[in-house]
Length: 416
Image (cartoon, rainbow, N blue to C red):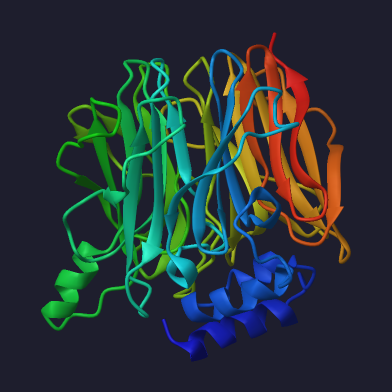
């Protein structure tokens, strides 16, 4: 993707009737270099430490006994700290790695952290190896509950580029991780062929992330700069949601079930018809209810619909319901995130009014058939991370990192 194509995309967005695109959504149309340079304008330059107060992205994990582990990136450093009071106070941070400006801190990049039933911790993050945005995913582990970690090491041996890890723990205790992989792009380049995007790759670990089975490719043609959404179906199988590249350069969303035997068919979520070679930097979210229904939320600037939308599928992605807009049509909506339990579904998203970023939520008690009215949960001025959802016993919690108001863990609902 060239700077020229990026500029044209940005110009079209700014001149469109939907000119109220949020600032981070506008940045999302830029290429890698433009995005990284522009994103710094949203973060106060005065914060120079690597503590949570200077973090740009923070990912939580709540253990069964209520211990919160938080992994974050700040000024080139990856750190982890613990809280026994749901985020009110934290232990001293443990520095996992320091990569300086090469740490991947793009709009969709964040560290991944998991804790198994034995209290062992698995961590994954990515950093850039060169000036061409080729990255490496590193992993680290802790066998003492997060007090100390092993030295980070590469997830795979392939030397091309891997970014945007997304990980979860399956019911049997195994670790599943997926990422954007560019080995096929690198191979095509070596053969003199131009190939856009990347691929969806994945791997399993049966020993808490110490070793992984040989990685596989689920889809060889995907967007190269958008996070992957992942959830578990009732069988304990991972299901990934991501921005695929369909014939004609159309970048619309897809889901795939990752069975033990391998990745199943690619299922298109919606025909948005977004033809672009730009990098949206806005990946989707997926949650799967107890009935096995797939719930997906995503961002698009397609010719058939533009904005943030939600749809669901009752047949493992074979077909999806008609997309429904999230937020009002004129609102600056971004960063949707979903969580499901039984037949209940919760959805949060971010809205920007020019001065404040606000987090809204709504929920469904009948597996996505009907929804409550949107409710304002929190808002802040200045920089803020994406909203995330997690559950704590019967409570549903919003995890939100803000620069001015600090880290927040807020109860927004209750399972029934």
